[in-house]
Length: 390
Image (cartoon, rainbow, N blue to C red; front, side):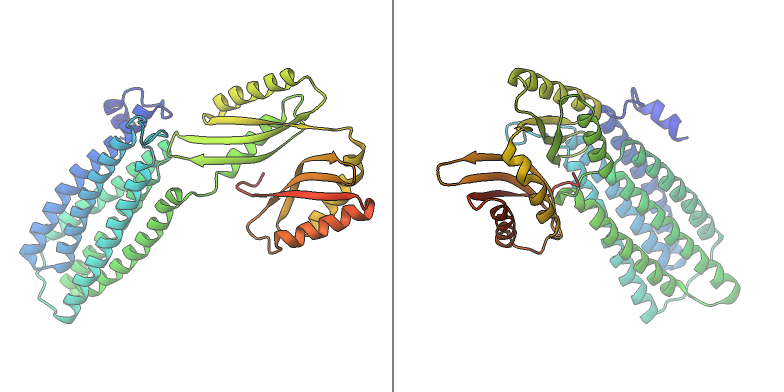
């Protein structure tokens, strides 16, 4: 069924890397959700009014908010596909993340709304009327919601969309909520015990918890989450595979939305190699790794003196000293600048977020280490933040 819809409504549907194709998937998910949610919402509200079931009415209103969420998804994907402009040189792809956050907030609001209605029903119980029409409508709604969850999850996974995955979670919640309502109707029919409000409250709590989880998940990319470790590993492996690359560091990845990922890296090369040859190597790496990973890739060339006697003397002791501190790693860009009275040993250290030592403490310890080798040595350290695990 899913593949049939993809083929019917999305041109070149297998090319999910294409912005237009991605937009097509988002618009299809939004349209399918709007139509199906509107139909089952109207049916539930009508039956709920006839049978005086607050749970059925609340469930119908919840589906109405789902229809609104589908409109948000539809508009969000349309705006996310807008091209770059002067005010937004990196494009508008992050609007997709914003749409996902809005959907998550709507889910949370629906949970609170259902909880309020359920508590009112518990405090002021009203007689519920059993109807086979109610059972039929609820059973139909459960089937539709299960299919919605499957369709949205498959679609979200296909294009790696947090927004559509959030919609899938919402559809799953709705299927559970409607199932609880159906159970309460059946229990009332055979026992006369009205659990309408209590089951509605239980479902509301579940939806609220799910909404909070979805808000955390969809807001993370907007705040700037850590890049995919697999992407970092692949970039490192690809760059280090080139002859002439001595090492890499300072890999930084910025996500401006699906299909808008930028990365920069420092590549260490032998300082004694012809500079034009090294420059050509770095240019080649930029082009080929960028094409392979599908990201905007920029590489910076760092010449390294591999045969400097001073560096050979201090490198291992400095690395040993640095390793004694928790949260420090990767000494790089080491070079020496000799003078009449002293020699500066200049290098960078990557500092992780869990490092408790101050820069002054680290600088003092490393400086003492090199002065034990030669009192005329001074250290000049640049502390780099660890944006990735590289």
